[in-house]
Length: 410
Image (cartoon, helix red, strand yellow):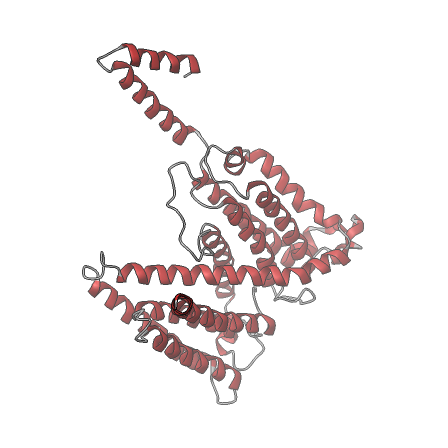
C-alpha cells in the first residue's frame, strides 16, 4: 500500500466516528507485518544456508587433501603452486581454508553492528544468494594463485584463529550449562522439576564415571601407558574438584552443572587420547579402527559434521560473551548477532584446517583421518584444563565481585 493510501486511511479514521478507518488501518498494519515476515529476509533460514556453504567447503578441502593428486593435475600450470604438489595435501587444505576465511570475514565486516531488521545489512545477510555464491567461488579459486610462502604464513596464523574458536566454543558450552542450571534452580522450576533435575544430574555423573572407566579399559592396556593414565586420572580428579566447588556453601550451584561439565571434559579427554597417532601401542582402540574401513569412514563423517554443528551452534550464541545482562530484545531486533556469527565461521575455517592437517602444516595425513597427531592430543587436553578453569572462575567470580563491592562501600 502506498503512502497516499495510508493517508486516506488516517483521514477516514479522523472523520469516521465509528472507528472504521482505525479498523482498516489496524488490518493494514497486520497485513504489512505478515508480508514482512513471509516475504522479507529470513535470517533464521540464512544461517542454515551459511552452514551448508561451510560444510561444502570442508568437503572440498578434504577432497583436495585425499584425492587431489589425481583430480587436480591442471594445478601444475598455476604459478603460485610451483607444481601441483604445493596446492595439494596440507597446503591445499590451507588454501581452501584461507578462501573460506576471506569469505566469512568479508561477511563479518559487512554485517557487524546490525541491530534492526529494517537495516539494509539484514537484507545483505539474508538474501542476495547468487552474488554471495559467486563471491564464495571466487574466494575458493583466488588462494591457488597466492605464493606458497604466504600460505605457510597463514597456516601459522591459523593456529591462533583455531585457538580463538575453541575458546569461544568453550565459553558458549559453559554458558549454556550454567544457564540451564540457573533455570532449573529458579523459583519457577525448582519444585516442579526437582525430580527431573535429580535424575538428569545422576545420569550425567554415571555417564561421566562410565566414560572414565571405558577409557581405562580401551586406552590403558598396560601400566606402561603412563601418559594416558595421567590424562584419565586427572580428568577424574578435576571432576571431583568441580563438584566440590559447585557444592561450596557460598556457591550452591547444585549437582547438575558439574555433572554436565563432567560429561564435557570426559569427551574432551577421550577426543584427546583418540587423537594420538594410531601407531601408538596404548591407543588400542585406534588399532581396531584401522582394521575396519567402514568405521574409519563413519568416524570421519561424524567428525566433519561435528565441526559444522559446533561452528553453527557457537555462531548463533552471540550472547555467550556478554558477561552482564542487557535490555530485552525487541520484535524488530535481529534474531542473532550477524557479525559474531560470521566471525565464528571465519575462525571455524581456520579450525577445520588445523583438524585436517593435524595442527601441522607440514604433516602428511592418512586418507579419511581427521585431528590425528600429538599436537592435536595436547590441544584437546589443554582445552579440557582451560574449560575447568573457566567453569570454576564463573562460579567464583560473582563472589569476588560481591566482596569487592562490599569493601568499596565500607
